[in-house]
Image 1 (cartoon, helix red, strand yellow):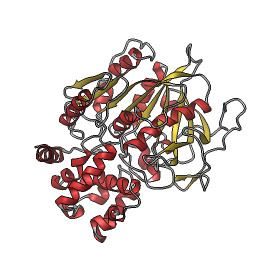
Image 2: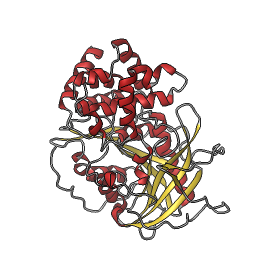
Image 3: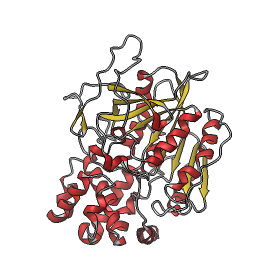
Length: 436
């Protein structure tokens, strides 16, 4: 690929959607109290291949520093229309899949046309009858800086994620993996803004159909943590892929309860958890750009805003170097009124359980998860069912932590996809993992 960064490629655990990459028992306890109170190296690039009949092949993807080059001003385009694409050839890390980097049009929460980057993966060999069904993958938190975009990293940001996607590719699924708006492309990443993420997860499927032949008409939204939230929002995509059918959604430990997150982080006194809070504040300010009161300097003051800027400039793997030893209350000097007001806005943009899911959904949760509290996911499932969601299946895994549940649940994931229009899986045995 164009660039490789050893500090990122060495990551051995996935990015996080809610509480990124660390043991967070104190925060889980603090947030629980708040809830009670509130509730009462790639191959050498090849030219982009297989444009749609009669179309002009898109230009190759290019980086300017850590940011993908996007035409300015951005020409109008329908959601999923390709902007640029580069074929990197087979990738041994990902089951020998042919790998593309793609730039495509999507739509944000306010209906604006935005460029998004991502990855397209095609299994080796001939497509099955009817074409490869597509899994559109939503990644967990990697950070908000462009250098943290999974499409720029040989392992897509995590060895655990390459293992998960490898299982899907070996089972016969094509995989698309959005970076989400502002992560790898100009502008701030609108972190945990559900419509932005969900539209991007859906629209990259349309882009993949323009890029490669042999894709089927059934697709699935699947994601972990932040990506689990994104997968649930993909069921409500503003512009669902034309001609394709969403067979179902799988959300693994989905981010939720955003309305109480800031108060929980502040009360936790765990400095490492500040990264999630600062990413979320930056994401909210990016989606509500007309509200000057949401700028980090207005909310946090000069000293804390300077610290926040240093965190936002790095990735989740390096945030502890900045946050170590900080006081969470001083770094988030927000009043109770501010916490409530901002929390309500975050929840309105990002809670994934405020509308029914119109397709079958499988929600997966490790019972030993210290990053996304199992009680939160229990409540998400209950709320989605009360709203009249078509079919919400819930699987929990005793002893499985935030990362380990990916391996533990892979056979159930493949069985669910098969039951809803996917490929009949071969004999499946979950890998043996730890229970942290």
